[in-house]
Amino acid sequence: MSSAARLRLRELLDSQQCVTCASVFDPLSSRMADEIGFQVGILGGSVASLMSLGVPDIYLLTLSELAEQARRVCQASDLPVIVDGDNGYGNALNVMRTVAELEHAGAAVITIEDTVIPRPYKQPELNLSSIEEGCSKLQAALNARKDANLAIFARTHAHQPHRNLLERMDAYSRSGVDGICIFGQISRALLVQLNRVTDLPLMLIDYEASGLSSGSGLSSEELMQLGVRIHFNGHRAYEDSVKATYQSLLQLHNGRESRGRTDNDQNAKQLIGRFARQQSFTAMSNDYLDPVAR
Image (tube, rainbow, N blue to C red):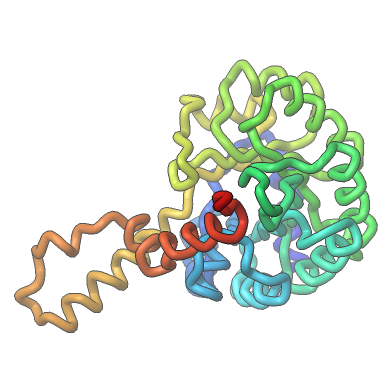
C-alpha cells in the first residue's frame, strides 16, 4: 500500500492544485479520510504523543513509538500520509534512522524540521538550528531513503525574520528535498517572495491549535498559484473525537438526564490540556528547564 500511496502523493505534488490535508491518527481515521476523498493526510507529532502517551507535545515521544503509530495509520489505507518526523530525533545520523523507520512504516512524506528539540536548558522554546546543520540533516535524510518515491520535506517556522526565512528556504531548496513545509501564519506578500527563491511544492501549516490563525485569507486557487500544494489547518477531527469521548463517558456515568449539562460543553483543547496534564508538565518545565535562581 505504501508504494501506491507514494505514487499518489507524487502526482499531487506535480499537479496544479492545492488540497486540504486531513488529520489522521489511527487506522479508522485513515480509512475514513481516504473514503471521504481526501488526497493526503498527516500524522502530527502532537497527536501521536497524545495517542501514545497521553502527554502534550513536549517531545517525550520516542522514534519507536512514533513509528508504531505511523505504521498503524499508513498501512490501514491507500491514503498518502505525511508523518511529522520532528527534527529527526537528534543529529544527522539520528535523522537517517528516523527516515529508515518511517519509510518502513509506510510514510509517503516525512517532514524534518530545523528546531532544536528537546528544549535545551535555559533556552527559548523556539530555537532554530543553523542553516548549515539543517542542510546537513536534510542531505542525510535524502541519502537514507531507499524508495525514491518517498518525499522528504524541509520544515521551518514562519515565526522568524523574513530575511532569515527566505535564506533558509533558498538553502533547503538547494539541498535536494522534494518540498518545503512552513509552520505558522504567512501572508500573501511573503508567499510571493518565497516563490522567488524556490520552485518546490509548498505545504502550509497555519492552524489555530498552535495559537495561530489562518490569517492569509487566500483561497485554494490563490494558494495553488503561489506554489502551495498542501494546506493543513488543524487537528479538528482528533479534537472533536476527544470531546465526543468525554461527553459519551459522562452521559454513560451520570445517566441520560445529564444531557444538556453545561460541563458537557467544555472546549476540546481545554479537555486535551486537562487530561494530558498540561499544567503539570508546564510546571516541571519551569522547574527543570528554566529554574528561577534562588
